[in-house]
Length: 116
Image 1 (spheres, rainbow, N blue to C red):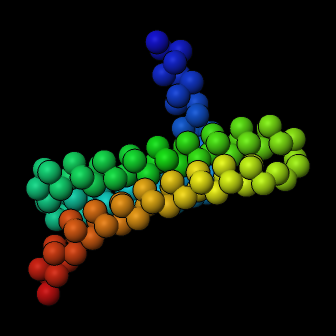
Image 2: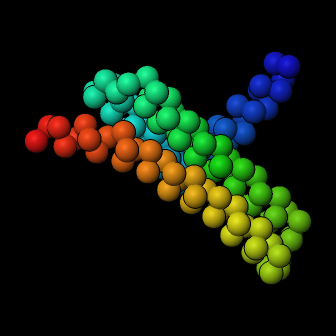
């Protein structure tokens, strides 16, 4: 079991080192956590924000895995089905990010408007 966790963390760390978009998602996730702390949002709102952060990161990890496997199986050749797989995986990340932005807007826009 400890080995399995080690492999999982290796995947996360390798993705963090090699995938710019993953690092961008982490950055915005950290900003969202800081926003939750600063605005002292309700527990259910913090849970929604945490869900959104982890959902986007999980989708980005899956996207990276699908891209790696697709590249491996195509051996450098471009195939229409490979493009479909990679585009669909990227689309999954996009949908997760749109959901995260919507949750962030629902949680933070009223808090920001209350400042004015």
